[in-house]
Amino acid sequence: MPMKQKVTGKKTTAVKKVDKRQSIEKIIKKNKVISDWLREGGPGRGELLMILTEKLPRADRKKLERTADAVIGLGADLVRRIIEIERENRQLRSLSVTDELTGLYNKRFFKIQLGVEMARSRRTGHPCCLAILDFDNFKEINDSLGHSEGDRFLMEVGLLMRDRLRPTDFLCRLGGDEFGILMPATGLVDAIGIARRLQQFISDIHWKKCIITASIGMAEFEPAAKVELDELFNLADIELYRAKKDGKNKISYTGVIERRIAAAEPVSLRERDLLLKVKSETPPK
Amino acid sequence: MKARKKRSPIIVCVTSGKGGVGKTFLTVNLAAALAKKGKKILVVDCDLGLANVDIMLGIRSTRTMKDVVFGEATLQDVIVNTPGGFDLVPACSGVRDMAQLLYERIEVVKEMLLSVEGYDLILLDTGAGMTEVVLQFNLLANRNILVINRELTCLTDAYAMIKVLYQLFGRDSFDIIVNSSMDAAEGDRIFRHLDSICRRFLGFPLTHLGSLIHDEDVPRSIMNQEILVQACPHSKIAESCASMAGALSRWRA
Image 1 (cartoon, each protein chain N blue to C red):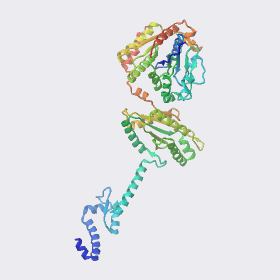
Image 2 (tube, each protein chain N blue to C red):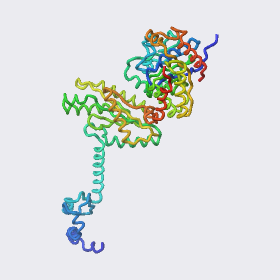
Image 3 (cartoon, rainbow over the protein chains, first blue to last red):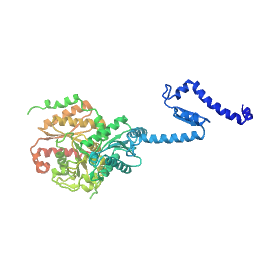
């Protein structure tokens, strides 16, 4: 075959071009599956249609591009497209874990990373801690200075808070004026110290004459404890609620011993009834 | 002249579960009775935020446990002498969140308590309730004294405290003092009652350290900021305290 082509020379290449074009259209026409795939809104359309081509004339490519998700030529084109797609991918991935307003991590990332840290704790035996922080008077900023000022506050204070944490800690915006802090390989007492410093830093901020305070709820993950991710998250949330109820600008947590007491077997009714019998055994005066 | 023995003191925690049972009154009077016997005693008011011992003794101190917790002083720095012949680490009244702060610094405070020298016995007067801090002090101590009285709620709270300390931390040795009983027989009865339930459900006996008979002198001495064992040394209560102090002074770590 190649020999024959060489002999026929230039003439044949021109014919070949025509043939190729015809053949693509022929193939599409002949093959019902492919034509269904390429038909706009057709029944056979899948989730993603990518066509890999080689030496396809521009007009044909254009035609295919109308309905295919991507038409990629082999060689340099392929490499360029892979780089493009990977770059896009990364951007999308970061968008899906980044909080749009503050540029911090978002709640989705917080939960994913919490799972990672819990697994690490189970593996290493070191506890990890999480804190949920909520500004006590954010509504005041929003109401008196407007929502755009509120947004600016969240953005700037969010970044300032991140600078006050250790490089290994994760600060995430969970939504509204609520932030989550994940402290890997940190016990409760140290975590409380970090939270206290952060709380102090916040209460020193004067945002256009508004005095800001924050309430913080904390929870510790004990590697030995059979606590699931959502349970742990809820523990911190309950503590935050307690901090708010206690009068705001508070840090709330439950120590390990208190948690063990709560989980311990209480005084049974049988024991109680017997204890109360002391009355009947005490003779009247 | 013999140099003071550098033996670390026995740490005794006085607790009750329920509040208002007479822990602080007992701690102060036991300490005074022990001091009378020539023992070097240190009382540490661990009821932070709601200090009582200094008020009972009429002491006003500028430096308190607060400074220790905040790391601004060592225990030695805040120790004061009292008219009872024993030394005191006073707590501070009305400091908000003190109990929380203490939790965060408990390891440091514990270390300081364990390294105190020059005393025969340290009495820790804890706050009411079964909080983290109260339990930490109970666990730190070599011996646990539980103060109870005839009130039903007091009895159940004391039993709950014993049960928690036993089940979660394996403590199975408690010394019971029955406060404000009608007579010695009632004190014995209340003790035996609690003891029988402990034996039955938890499987270990309790020790009866003594009973204090109800006495109208008690509220008067508290009002006058006097130490009863000194103000009325021949009262029944003073005698009971002296006999309990005798038992305590024989304790070894």
